[in-house]
Length: 341
Image (tube, helix red, strand yellow):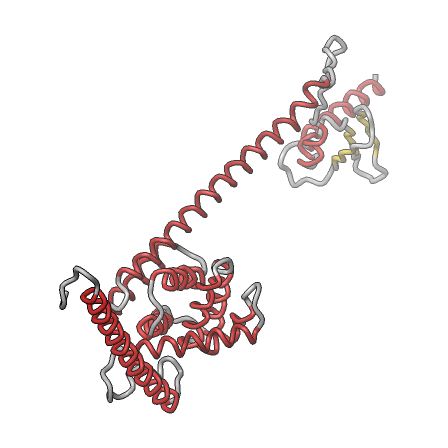
């Protein structure tokens, strides 16, 4: 009976101590140790060697019983599930040959459509630009001599053409129209020089415009010679840079030089011919790059030729009258003729 009573008292003390381990208590009499290294819970009771009877209880729980002590990341990793399709699920079939060929075909179709749209847009843009350049040249020719209107025309068409460098092409169109539509003379040279100033063209851009115009007029030697004549007097440095005298397909430099000199002297003689005998040489020799001595010489030669032409015309008229009188005399001496007829 004493042994049984001792066992009951010991079991009661162990139960009380185990319950007190989970309560907020400062009593260190019976420590509680939790271990996660065992696979099943184990309650172990041991007696202390101290004089007062003490019981040591260790509670070892499974890992799942102390889940609140597990790190959140480890708990999240443990809850990760991998889906596996059931055995009855159908296996996806690989794409057919038609499906595989359809994808690159669609891509090629999209690329071809985009390329066609781009080509069409580029063609329409070029047509618009060419039309604007032609309108610019026509407008400049209409207002030729009116500096204010010409300057306004340059600004207006520059805005209509939009971003980009169009000064060279605008100048080329103007020069080509000037050569084709206006007669050779001092006014044409002055207007060409004024236009270069209004458009604020550099020597390089002016030379490029002359060169492009020479290409357009290469099949018309007379117009190409006219362009060379105007350019060499309106912008001599740019004309030299453009090498206009080398643009003639069938003539060498000496031939071109001879023709240009003849064109110059003929133009000034025409100007001198309009003046009366004894007049001063006409103005414009400096624009034509003629020296005063050449102007006087050409004036003298022109007046002398004019006098000679007048003399020859008078002699021809006198000879015509003499022949007419002789014919009348012959007719009057014939039988049946009346004298003086």
